[in-house]
Amino acid sequence: MSRVLSVASGKGGVGKTTVVSNLGAILTEAGKNVTLVDGNLTTPNLSLHLGIPLYPVTLHDVLKNNAIMPEAMYVHPSGVKVVPSGLGIGDMEGTDSRYLPVAIQELFGETEMVLLDTPAGLGQETISNLEASDELILVTQPNMPSLTDVLKTKNLAEDMGVDVIGAVINHHTGSREELNEEEVSEMLDGIPVLSKIPYDKKVPEAVAMKKPVVHHDPHTPASHALRELASKVTSEDLNIEYKRGGILSRLSRIFRS
Ligand SMILES: Nc1ncnc2c1ncn2[C@@H]1O[C@H](COP(=O)(O)OP(=O)(O)OP(=O)(O)O)[C@@H](O)[C@H]1O
Ligand SMILES: [Mg+2]
Image (cartoon, rainbow, N blue to C red; front, side, top):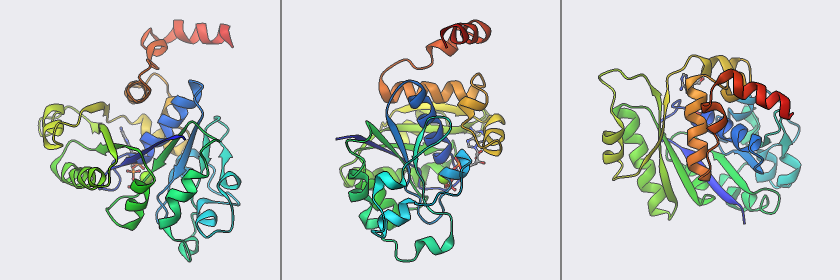
């Protein structure tokens, strides 16, 4: 059995794919056998964040029973394993998201952990992603509209028996109108805030470069926050080398490689 962890938000555009692609990059670099799956079937964007948009076989083919999961699995140049969804509008034709939990099970034995990038909203596609998951990380921005949507997602997931391990506050700027960590946690019935990722212009820059930000700029504040998040997920300190500081840690990595 693999650990299946999904990342969801309710609201769109809050940072789910950013969290999934970077967690994948960090955990792969730490030697974990992780596979990222783009469970966002209608508006997929994981492969766009990683810069290989055209795959011959995708999750859509698996859900249409035209392929098996290992055939839709690719190794990104960064070493991250990815099961992408098809980007064409026609890919949805004949696709039934309700087979997603079975498809995910085909990865058991191939991978230690599956990270599922889920769609926005609370429709069947999201339900299928949650059905496939053991655990869930919620992503919210520090404002009420985002938080109310994430609360609905949390309640739905809990009703389905998914273990909601915590929330990530993304796009944190420190401005006075923002909800703070305590308010977010309280509104989510005490679910812990695992990480506060700052608004960081290196993140969209990394998407434009088609790389996870932790590879684009490992020392930018968002990269530190994402490694802190990965540390919470694995209960291992995966940020220690970077916390020790720029030049020395870079030199030590060069000498070890
Ligand atoms: N911490 C951040 N700082 C600055 N920009 C960010 C940050 N996190 C995400 N972004 C930007 O916000 C946009 C949306 O992020 P992302 O695609 O990860 O959201 P999403 O929740 O997956 O969206 P969707 O619901 O459409 O799938 C992207 O352009 C990304 O570069
Ligand atoms: Mg996304």
